[in-house]
Length: 193
Image (cartoon, rainbow, N blue to C red; front, side, top):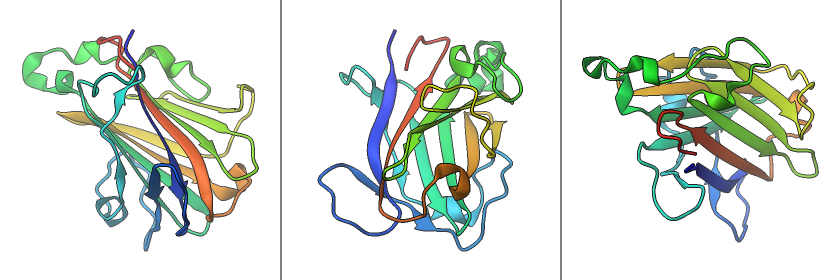
């Protein structure tokens, strides 16, 4: 099984670090969490990508891009997962899996994206969503944690997008300093991470 992942630090304010850095800028207006990345905050956000296979030997076949921004209350995450099988002309939409539904769903066998996020000095948090309406959240390995966050996915003709709003109150951090994060994607039909 192949895997894709991006690992870097998120700088919510300018800082100097000796690791890959993605600066998340303050959003002038919060995005509407509808799964579509069409608001101005996403157009101006810096992006992380392209993703590599987790084994590191090659770029992923289908590109994935992650973007971040924030305001006083939330960290916003937007992920675009290019998927050629969503082209309606191919008649292969059924191969893009979104079988798990609702909160606390086991989305990991579906076409999905995951976010691992660790504020300075805090435990890491795990957020995941499939290309439908299934979501998952956990604190470390504790899947019983029920975080107050919003997430929506949207399926287009060439990609699916996932939009998240995570309250800083849930993260135990403020929008400052360098945060560790990791974004992964699973393509079920390609058996690729």
